[in-house]
Picture 1 (cartoon, rainbow, N blue to C red):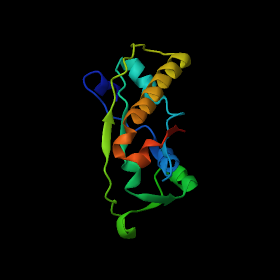
Picture 2 (cartoon, rainbow, N blue to C red):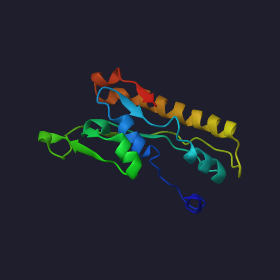
Picture 3 (tube, rainbow, N blue to C red):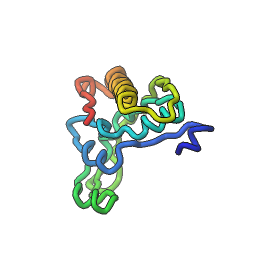
Length: 150
């Protein structure tokens, strides 16, 4: 990833297996981000801006049930997904991809934890603000939703 960041942009989904389980809540929008800070450290080391991205409605296309303990042990998601007609086919639902403004990051080869935490907080705040600014686009039932950072 570091060699790619020297020459281009890199998209990373930082939530991992834990994010699948934390985000699996139809009543709330959740992003497992509070303990994921390695991507911030890499951005600081490369001096690459961070761009918040969120896909409104993506949480509605499939339902989910799984075993978090087994998934963590096997380092893969052990779960069942279902959607339309109870099949593993996505439900029809609008998905709007939100792309925020880049967050500039000062390059530092060996950032301290306070710097990483500060940039992470800026990124998290920007992601929540992006969600709040655009959530109404999916209708009135979305206008009341909050994005939980867990």
